[in-house]
Amino acid sequence: MEGVHGAGSGTPRAVGVQVTGRLSGKTYTVLLQNSSKSEVILTAGAIGTPQLLMLSGIGPRDHLQAKKIKVVADSPNVGKHIVDNPSTRVYIGSPSPVEVSLIQSVGIDPSGTYFEGLSSPQKSPIVVVTQKVAKPRSSGEIRLLTLNADDNPQVTFNYFKDSVDMQTCVSGANTLEEVLLTSSFSPFITVFQPMPSGGIVVAPNRRNPLLKPTGLVSP
Image 1 (tube, rainbow, N blue to C red):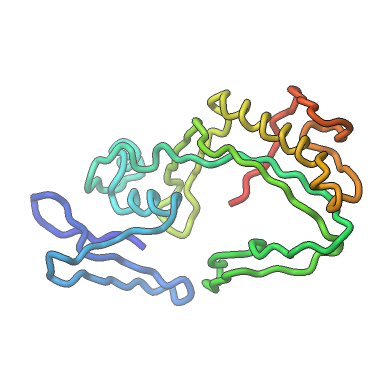
Image 2: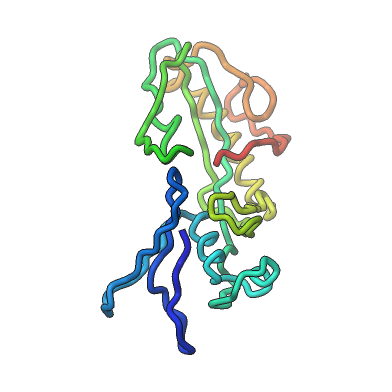
């Protein structure tokens, strides 16, 4: 999808959108009604929204010109300051059945099918405990790789660029280990598994400062 802009020498104004069907491959143009109350609302998520804005000519002038996109509005902050929340997860075997997660697959798949929730039975029950950095200080940016809206843009989150985020994540991982040692969790845990610190939980209040930054990104 891309924005359609009105002609004229005044302030640029979106007058509609162009939508390409994922299955048909056909492009359709939808124009606003001639009304002061008509507007285009772009809600394509934290990554898709700046991507579509830049493809429509709204974004940092230097980046748009480098991609040979006509600049409709020079807006330097489009695609900037994107933030994601680093997290730590611990997976623990459980002696009793636990509720199966409904977030294994959610959203729109490549065929255009929408899934509200999809899950499958686990071979063995597990408990997953997660901590997240609620307000990370590190931020990144989104840049276009191609002029095709179906192609993913380049996303740089700059995880842990600010050292405070790493300290917060390490503290949270240590707290997870301490929580799992409490009597409240003992009925749900069969055996202690390796913790984020790389060791085994053996004593409460163990503050391990040697956690190493390893991880993966889940889209």
